[in-house]
Image 1: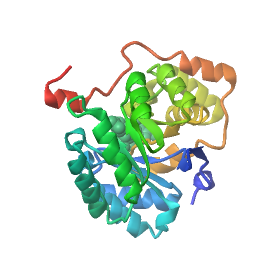
Image 2 (image 1 turned 30 degrees about the vertical axis):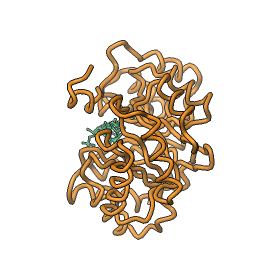
Image 3 (image 1 turned 90 degrees about the horizontal axis):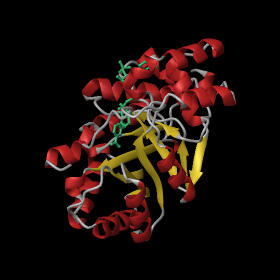
Image 4 (image 1 turned 135 degrees about the horizontal axis):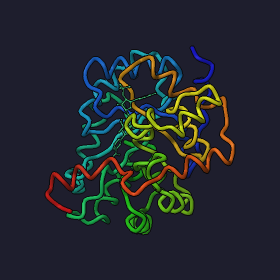
Length: 281
Ligand SMILES: NC(=O)c1ccc[n+]([C@@H]2O[C@H](COP(=O)([O-])OP(=O)(O)OC[C@H]3O[C@@H](n4cnc5c(N)ncnc54)[C@H](OP(=O)(O)O)[C@@H]3O)[C@@H](O)[C@H]2O)c1
């Protein structure tokens, strides 16, 4: 086992301890998914990110059980797809997620994308009830803008512990990050290595060479050094260790500034799959 992956630090918000490193599982399916999850946990990952939409909760649960790691030592997140945001449907869907994972509760349950067709107050009411009923230890949101986050915080009766959104050096998310900090919410960065595109970046590679690290490791370090949770995905077992070896070096302030300067206008990689599906803007 790599020493780098032991004792991954956590971010603590509103009673939740979220490990700063997790494994993303979008697009991992079947045996590959179960195997990567199992290996990640054996290596020392303690946080797995899935969603009902990824169609892999069953395999995530299988990987968890095969790893032999105790349930309470792993932080499991899943997400409810917006077409299931009507209150009764949300509750039913949460139970179905748990059934596929074969878990009594998840650590974190998120609203996957906003759904303007269903009043947020109703959806949040149902999400809070699901938490109170013991199906989720913590709740939060994903892909919420600053105004939507403000609205959600006004409407919720339970703490919202995070906003999960696209976050990597090629995209300036400073306003959303500042809003999360102001509200005591964790930032969970998805697509944290820009879907693998960081590999070809000259600045990240040059800084990496100075630290004997890869561009992907420098990118992940840039985020965790700001207390941002990262959930890189890989289908390759050998990359699990690489993506986790980010807690044994530090970037200087000038290095952090050079990486922050990589943000560009067209840096966004993920558009709302849900809006596109519904034919909205
Ligand atoms: N809430 C949301 O709406 C939302 C949206 C998108 C993603 N997410 C979550 O965030 C997770 C991560 O985001 P993502 O999957 O979009 O992108 P990502 O983690 O930024 O990048 C994944 C890609 O990078 C490659 N890769 C992994 N490690 C690498 C390394 N060390 N060097 C070079 N390439 C590497 C992977 O290929 P190989 O498989 O070949 O290694 C894969 O193609 C998802 O899996 C999902 O759990 C959430």
